[in-house]
Length: 289
Image 1 (tube, rainbow, N blue to C red):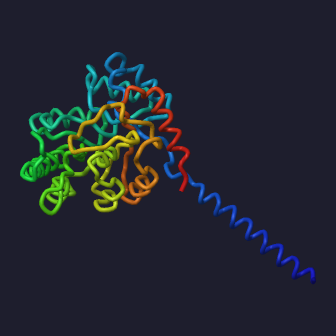
Image 2 (cartoon, helix red, strand yellow):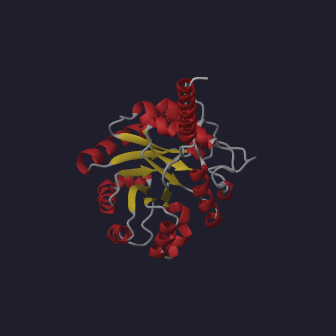
Image 3 (cartoon, rainbow, N blue to C red):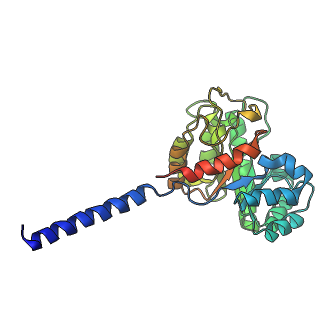
């Protein structure tokens, strides 16, 4: 074999090896880069006793992004100072439906003080079942308040699903009504993947269907063997560490990335957060494309 031919073959082999290595590195790219945020409800009992100490414990996990749904006896200004001192942020502020409607200016002020960009509601008061009629009424209220928050305060309103919205009614569900009848400019959504899967919806399918309407996402998993319903309620210890339950998290995360979700928060309502939260963070780090 001529030297030139051997040299050419060697170059081809080296190029192939490099290509294969590059492809291997690409295939091993993390599916979930970085660290997720945290919902304050995960550590609700700890926050009730010691706000700064709980923030320290969350920061030690590598978490910097918070979604608060309670001020835990402090003021928004005091909580903001504690976050700033730790290099942490509050990107979303959760409130009750009644406060959103009746105390809109107070909600907006607290959200602004915290530095939040989103105001979130996670439960619509109702007597089961949650009806299409109530969905129509609620969509109108969300449009009104969402516009006020956007125009007057630069805030984005988000509704967080809680399971009861997915009862088949007519040609769709009340959740479909909330999506169809709210203005994208004034109303966004936070997908709680457990409370989508629990009533039988497909979280990844919802992300594919509604895309950029979902700005925020709660990372949760549901204990294997638990059967869901439309109540919007289940035992808190049915929340399990990510990757150990029923949900297809890789498929959900891929769909969420395509949808352009901006913030991801772990929400673990169980009594086992000391063990499960670090396990969930490690699971997310282990995922590759």
